[in-house]
Length: 388
Image (cartoon, rainbow, N blue to C red; front, top):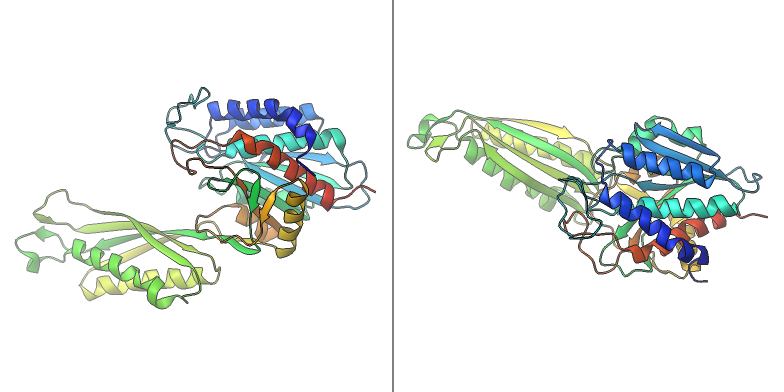
């Protein structure tokens, strides 16, 4: 069966919604226009409930099927926030907000879920309750956790949850996912090295924090190569390095670095943190300096439920999509992981074609993917809660 004909009819309308959001991006939790537009459309579609302000600025829409005998509640999620990037696409509908753009396709995710919502509110050809989650602050703000903390999962007694993310490099009309870990956790660290400043010509009278910090950087990278099981994928990166001096002939009092640790095995996060602390503190001590480690836990590992992956793959194939359900996991993180810690479900990558990559100033969501995403969402709901 091909994509649902209704979405071919709705494509110009859904595309217009997407372009409007792209033109007016909003960041993190500051989403008055986007969240307002989403809530307005859900009400216009005839949703049974539309609730704003879940997780600060999230929106939840509820559609009840023709029957309620199953007692089931399936949730679908889209993220709404943009990124603090200056757009360089040259599009007619390019961002009108300096320093902000939809560089990760959340405008497309939101538009597709709205399209599915309109169709499902019209047909209601399912037995149970559909919960539509429009989430703020995926890009670093843990908006999923904020919505969960506001009682999202229990308030609507959600049984399963699904979401998609566009994927540049995967052809339009294809979908990729896997059971188990799909995306890595992402924790951040800052290391501040304190020594004794001095003149570059007299290093023996100082404790050279630049040298100590450089040694820490080198030694940190032995954690992955020598402390982590080679079959457990972990990535450690030091992204910044600075001192409190701007002169070439001064040994600074302090040096600092910042980095991230990404793990596909949840059990590796604690080991990685412990070793980062030990390496930094003990290396500094060996040189007569001190190191303070500030560890900031980030998003958990995104772990797909195997049964949910199989069900999602079945729905995607039913609407004519090519499915790779044994795709390789990736190391970027995603706060959909918080939902999957609470309920079984699946996260999937929807083909965006040969486009610039996400988080690039030349990126744009591919409108040709819209009918596939909408059809997938609708088919999944109708299959998971079939009407008698």
